[in-house]
Amino acid sequence: MIEVLVSCNDTQRYPALVDPDEHRDGFVKPWFDLETVQRIAADTQDDAARFSHGSVDTVHVLAGQVDGQAHAVVLNICWMYLGGEKHEEAVEVCQPNEDGRYAIGGFEWCWYVLDEDLNPLIPAQMKREPLPPFPGQRAS
Image (tube, rainbow, N blue to C red; front, side):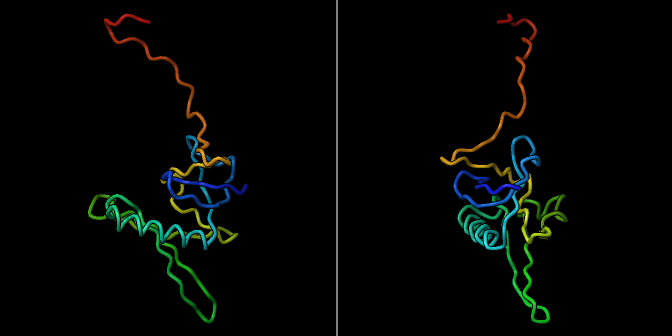
């Protein structure tokens, strides 16, 4: 795992750990500490209040104690799934890894690494071959 700065919306940036070998189409699966998850939770809830719940997933951190031991429950709510066919998948309980870090949004949020100038580092997704001409169209 390496420490990087990530974003999924060109606005908010968060420190995370990523496995450089674990990526999909150039996007990464970041692992966040609980303090950063709490920042993500505040930011997503602010965005939902501003833009509507139908356009933004929200993260919620519930804190409590059991037998004097502090615990956190992290929820990721996909509001767009509520009321539809995927309503049973609308709420995800995010489990921490062995280091106590959470993979908020996984690959679905399209997290990307930022370079030192805060530019996205998204490698080319595939080698693109020129498309054949349409029937009746001259080849260039």
